[in-house]
Image (tube, rainbow, N blue to C red; front, side, top):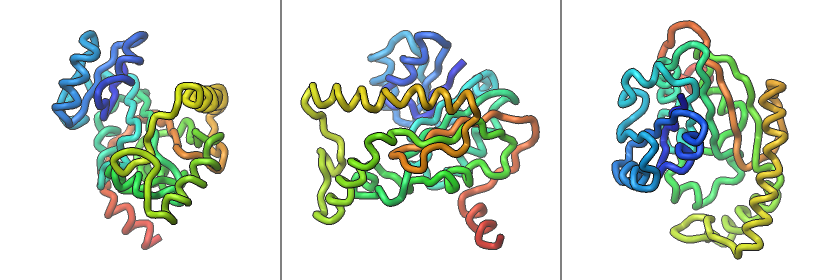
Length: 233
C-alpha cells in the first residue's frame, strides 16, 4: 500500500492507484473534497499524518511526501513522527525544492520555509532508524535557465507567473518540449535508485530521497533541538 502524504487534489495518489492500493491524506478539507470528486475510486482522508491514518500507517509499504516538508516549520519533528509510525522495511520517498540560491518571492508565495541542500535535507532524518537508499538532484537540465530567471526576478522585484509565483502555462509546443526535457531525467533517477546513489549531480531545482525504515525506536527530535545540537557539535 502507498500513502500519499499531502496529496492535495489527488493526482499523484490516483497515478499510484492504477497499480497499487493507495491512500491520499491532506489537512485541507477543500483539497480532499476536490480529490474525491476527481478520483472517486481512490481512498482519501482529511487529517494530519500519521495520526489520522490510524492502523493504515503501519500497513503502508511506501509513504510519498512530495514537496510537503518545506511547508512545515518543524520538518524534522514531522518526519520523526512518520518514521515512528512506519513498519520496519517500509520506504519513505521525499521530494523538496533545492538550492537556497533559487529562493525568490515564488517560494514565499507558496509558504515555503526553506529550500534544501543535500546536507540540510539529511539533517531531517539524522539520528532516526532509517537507511538512506538514494539522495539525488532532479530537474537538473533546466537548472541553469531557472536560476537565471530567478536571479533576474529578484533584481527586478517581480515573479514570472500569476499570484506572486513563477508558475505560468506556456504555449503547447513549448510545454511539450519542456515536459520531454524533464521526463528525460527519469532513466538516470531509476539508475540512481538501483545503484543506491548518494552523491548525484551537484545542481538541481529539486532533490529526491528514498529512505528504508530500520528496526529500532524513534526518539523524536524537533528542528530547534537539531539545530542546537549542530551548533554545539
